[in-house]
Image 1 (cartoon, rainbow, N blue to C red):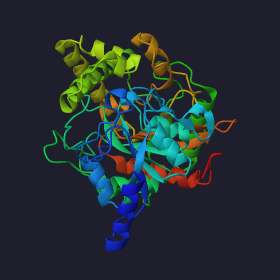
Image 2: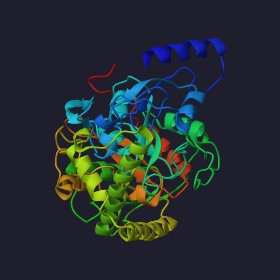
Image 3: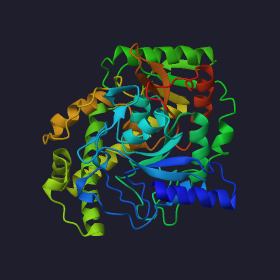
Image 4: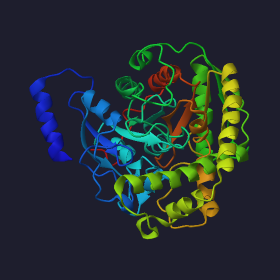
Length: 430
């Protein structure tokens, strides 16, 4: 999108309109980031070459903030995997070690920011797709509260509220400032997030006070996590205690099997619905050869899910959300590793696998902490607070109460000052 970006830059220079991100180059994820006249392929052959016929409301808000989109970034097909190795565009490599995954599904955006191409880039998150690549690439990845950013003009609610949009950035400040520019409902939204108490950028400079913070040094099934991830948690617990917070090892009441089953039911049905709606909007027919094998397997299974099974999954999700929300009445925040392992080598997940259980088994072992807060709708942020002995980033996820990104920005900013990461740059920087 270089030609249109240069045109926009010339207009920006000419009109001089003040905006927080005036003239800053920006990248849009090739999933949901609709830009009129530019294809949004979702990394799928099915949509290759099909231009969007409108700007999404979020893209318009990015532009009004002064950002200038210069291109689209790679993702996994329809955002389905926690890595970015689509058949259409190829593998996206991690700037810290190019043999490793940049995470997914917003891996292209995270790689671009980590490598210094842009300071901030669009990302979306339906099961961890902002936080996972932020963890893999050593970035700040804030998943905002459900409905904080509108999905207008065409989407009201995606996958029963699992999916939200925001960005990956190098600093807490940039994430907060950008959310100030984009947050708020759109016309006809089915529901809205509670309004913030004050601008998020102001939160970055406010003292979080003494917080009661929960942590957990095992996975949600009670099993062991990678030693590097354990080090990240123990070091963060010590840092929080030094900063005056009360840290307690305790986890929310999570029925891991119930949450996993409910999530996969909603997710699988969502894949089928998404592809069916795209057939209507594009006039193209969905055929097996236009999709990766795992995507097609999810599409076919999605059509077998009965309405009663879907409603049961929604009901169980809402029950779990109430239980976890009650936990946050006692604790101000809960932190865990973002992932159970450091960034994995490329090829660790198989999008050619058609056995869904077999395909998702390694995903469930890798990304168990992130989907919880897509189900509950709570905000959660991944912060780059640890690096392995071989130089790979390990993110720490901090989750807060529904609607309270402000507290997370205050705490994240405090941690950023106490243990700064801005001077850390990968070998591919610049």
